[in-house]
Every structure is written in structure tokens, then in C-alpha cells.
Image (cartoon, rainbow, N blue to C red; front, top):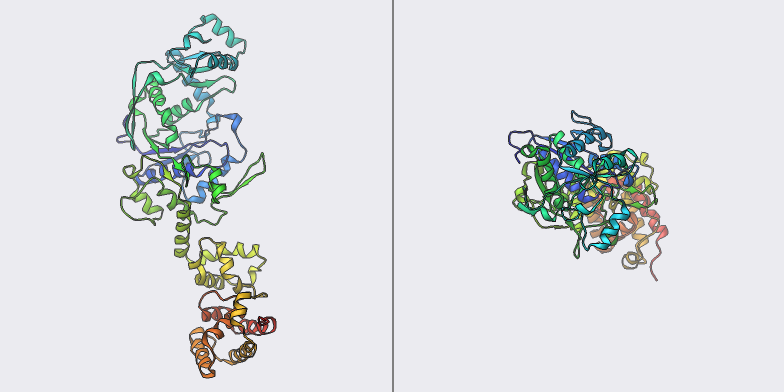
Length: 513
């Protein structure tokens, strides 16, 4: 197995059987990082040979998810390329040729066993598998006369083509993360490579043929595919392709955040985090599953978070953009053991990226949230919304959190926090706030830097309690005693709105009894 002196070519090959799991996204990301680091190509191949599990919309979902995350595809169904088609259901003629090659060379055989016959054998033989010890007692082209095989095919009997695994061999799988893994061929069964019922190959044959014809140099996939690697090594040998077979890389599993086992959608539902990149609407059940995009995650944060689940850069660096990840990525720093899905760390990454995000871009992401809450976006300029988010973004993990922290910049309060009223709104406060409103209305310069010392001096001259006055002032403007610096708020609200809110508060807020 050698990939020396060849252009690096990797493939991500999902099946369109539903939404793309976040574990699959990480596999795609690692393929992409490796390819870009080596100046190679990233192929998206759609493995739709299992026609019974096909789900409408799944292929479009896969493409949209990868595009959202910035995982660029060089060759694929949409992009085209010199080695297409890139959808396996469109490659039937290609697979037939290679099935025939294996049959003609005696590396595979035809089997006519019905599901009922196979079930009877499983009941008869504990831990039954179709292999060298049992194939002689089954209905296949190794036990039936040639004439009968031809007659059964001519009569339309359904059959499968099985790979002939010879016992007594040590099969070596060289993995760039796990090293050399040796498997006894005796434990391998004669896998089905082709089914006449739908005239399509199984995963095992289609992958080997496609990887060879598409010049794939590295097969980077999840650990769950490791048991199939010995069979794939034997298939490369059977076709005479051993010298150009790709290198194997089996990535560690993504594990539950708590307990043992592989991460599942059920874990996300139970603990309240998405396991899909985008929201998914199941076309059969109508069920809606949450996605990272719709939950308010930035794609850059999701990429950074996923990259560090099973890999590290060799130092303590955590926050890395795509270019940095490409530069630092290597299989040497990939873990052999599974990585716990620390979803709270994902929130931390999103918070960090939001803090570093340009306010103008964050403002555009916030506008749909404003519209959802009935705000007329046309009333607020881009500069205003950007200034608002710049004041409050340190408090948020998600774009949607901006509403709770900034709603008062867009909607004047009509209700006031009872606890704040009880603590800060004494019987003399309406008169003090009216006096403050009159003073603010007549102040020539409403710039916060000018206004703040004027108000502070006014409070001192009057002998008022600074904390009570300023909190009552904030209560009229915000509706509660929270938010950014008060004179940053007045800067954005402006004189008319600030004074109007002071006067409205005086009319509406009733001192606690």
C-alpha cells in the first residue's frame, strides 16, 4: 500500500438515508483538512446503493450542511469532475464489469440461498456465518452444477454474489492512527458484493471500485468501519490493485457526554443539544430535529469545536480558524480512543467566536431575531443595531440571547421588574425622576461622555443617593436594573427617547407598598 508521489485525494461518502450526523461532519472535516494541507482534492461521493433506505431531501441536506460549514468540495454530484458519476446508483454498468471480473477469476461466486434458507441455517448452527466451513452446504455456484446455475439465472431467480474468502491467512491492515492490525481470515465471512434484486453492489464492492477509479489515496472514515478493512484489503488484492490501494485512517468514535457508548440523537434530545448540523424535517414522520445552524451556532465555532474532538494541535491552542486548522492538522495527534462529546465546550466556542465577530456581521445575524419578536427592522439603521450588539455581546452564547440582553434598545419597557421597584422606587422617586427628565431635556450636549459628569454632579449637588437614583433611572429606560453602562444606553437611545422613558416610568411605576 503506497501513496508516494501521488496527488492526495480523499473522499467523503455519506449515504442519503437521513440527516448528516455530527460524527459524519467531523469525518468530512478531517478529510477536508488533510486534503487542503497537502494541496489535494476533496471528493463528495453519494453512496445510494441501499435503495430501500433512501430518504428524499437527504442528499440536498448533505450538500447544504457542508457548504454552511465551509467544507469545500472539489469533485462531486454538483461540482462534476473527471471521474464521475459521483452517485453510486448511476454507476451500475461500472460495477457489473468488476463483479464479472471477480466471478471469472474465481474470486467470487453466485449464491441462491433464500432468506428462509439462511434463517434455517442460523437456527441450526449457532453463530452461523457464510464462510469456508459452511459454503459447501449451501445453494451456490460452488455446489450446484453449472447448467443449474445458468438455468436459475435464466429463470429469474434472485441471487447474490459473494466474495470467496480463503481461510488460513493473516490479513494486515495498516492504519495511520492505529498502526498495523492483523486479522485472521478464518473469522471473515463471504460478504455479499452484489444483489441481483436491485442490480446494485453492496457497500464493500462499490467502495473499493470507486476508490480505485477515483484515485483515492487516503480513506479517512469512522472507527465503526474498521471491521470491514480486512475484507477491503483482500478485495484490493483480488483485483490486482494492492500496490495502489489507499492508506486507511480510522477515526475515534464520538461518545456520549455521559455514560458509555456512541453519541446518538437520543443523547442530544435528553441533554438539550443538536446532533445534526442543520435542522432536519423528517419527510415520513414530520418530526423536526434541531440543528446547530438554527440553534444559533456560528459555523466557524462548530468547525473549531469538532476539530478538537479526537485531535489536538500538539499544544494548548484551542481557538483556531479553518486556515490554522489546515496548517496544524496531522494524524499523529489523533486519538485512538473515543472522544466524549463535550457539548458545553461547544457553547464556549460559540461564545468566544461571537465575541470576536465583527459587530456589523453580528447585527445582520440579529435582525431575523428582531423580526421574530415583532420589531420593524426598517426603523433601525445598520449602525444602530451594530452599536447595540457591540454593547451586549459579552453576555451571550448565541445570537438569540441578544434579544433578552438588548430588547430595550428596540422596545420601550411597559412593565418593570417588581424586585427592582421594591428596592429602588421610593415614594420620592417620581419627583426626582421628573426633575432628571427636565434637566436632560434641556442639556445642550447629550453625548454620554459629556452627560455623565453633569448627571453625577447634579446628584451630588442635590444630596441624592447615587445608587438609588441611577438604578431608578436605569429602571425607567430598561425595565429592570441590568444592562450596559447607563450612559452608553442613553447615547444610543438619544435625548427624546430617554426623556420619554423617564416620564413614562414616572406615570407607570407605582411604589411598592
